[in-house]
Length: 114
Length: 116
Image (cartoon, rainbow over all chains, first blue to last red; front, side):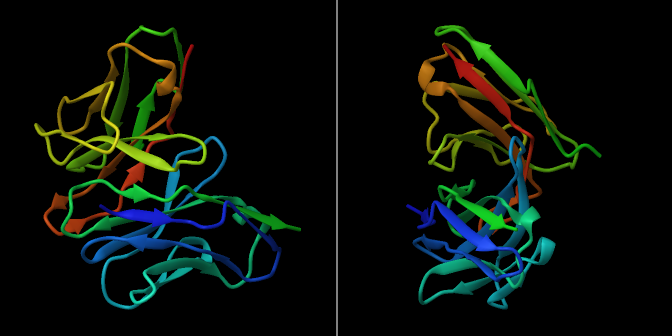
């Protein structure tokens, strides 16, 4: 079975400061890893993914994430937060050898304070 | 190019009523998915269809049925709605689904369902 943990329900960051949203995962094989963002009353929007290759993945809106196999982590980062980054962020995983469909974390509310 | 569309946007049902949630994608994707989102629980996979003509259960399939009508459309049916099925339902699609490969899933705007 595969699982995802997002240990923080909420992260508060001042505008202009760097932000990190944490994600750890568990799969039996090698993972595919994703980050999605959800704005209020909207569907999920894809931010970035790790499939293979470079451990640092760059995505939309200036976000990036670092795949760390030894720590089974895939933390989302941004060097300088914007108020408009405030949203609900989901990490998701799939075992490459597993069945279809993603397993999502519970989500982290990111609040950027002006 | 609308992406993934879902109807209806909102629905209120009484316990025991039935309804079908509709989903369509215009991206020529092979795979389609139904998830439910509940507060504090993230998204959980209900059913998926790896290709036209095939469907498989996900993590929480009880109380639901699905139909992959054609490559574009994937519907979710509640035969006898229960209050525990109050949730936001998301449909998603992705380009390919073969062993060892998964493309990005693209999500619809969701259907907010309340069962009284």
